[in-house]
Length: 304
Image 1 (tube, rainbow, N blue to C red):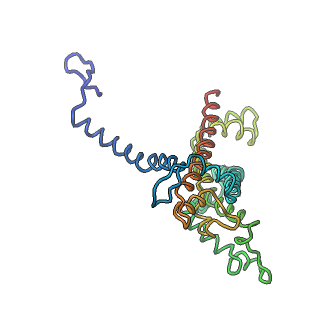
Image 2: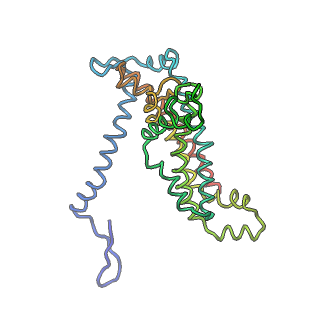
Image 3: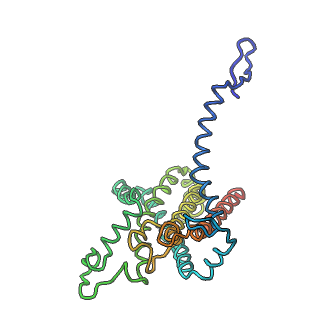
């Protein structure tokens, strides 16, 4: 309901929405809501329901209760390695790539020489999809024709960076962190530009060093950016799929929950119900991390 000024009294009187106004609002709000339900929440709820069935995508849908989850946790050897790899992915991006991106943002914000060049170069991997990053990783870390072994000169017994299950997970994590670091850097750089410089000047007058100023003044000011970066890091870690599938289809040490979902739903197995159960577990883990992180951040913001 909007207001228009009255001609005589000078008061703003309410004006009722016309049928045309209601139609426009319905279209502008209704279409996005319907698309969100159809594309996001519809498949999500369908996956939850199908996770309790034994459907193969063609025949009759049979209700099996929690049998898919019992088989997943007890009789599916690939599940626990994939879950560990997802958690390792989260730890590496959250504890290594994200702080490194923050460090780069701080250095560039201080106005080092060629900062524009560094900013553009470090951000360039962000425009690439993880599938392309996977192909680049193959060109660099391939055992026989990779650039790294060629530079090192290890031709007699070259290291199999992508084939050795003890090494390939770390190699792929480095490639994923290469892309993630640039994204984090840009987000933190935007946040640092918004920090009031008078706060830093006041801290310097009080005798605070650069480290004290950053951790006690600047970093708390970046709390909204920290929330965004934290959520993005969790989502990127748990939905990782493209890069490992491009390297070796997510096998031989690169198993992830998203790969197991794909293999069971659209692979040769054709187990829609079982694959949906894995997807529901991945959804629950993602929501658990994101909701817990947001609650902690919002609670901390209120305490301040």
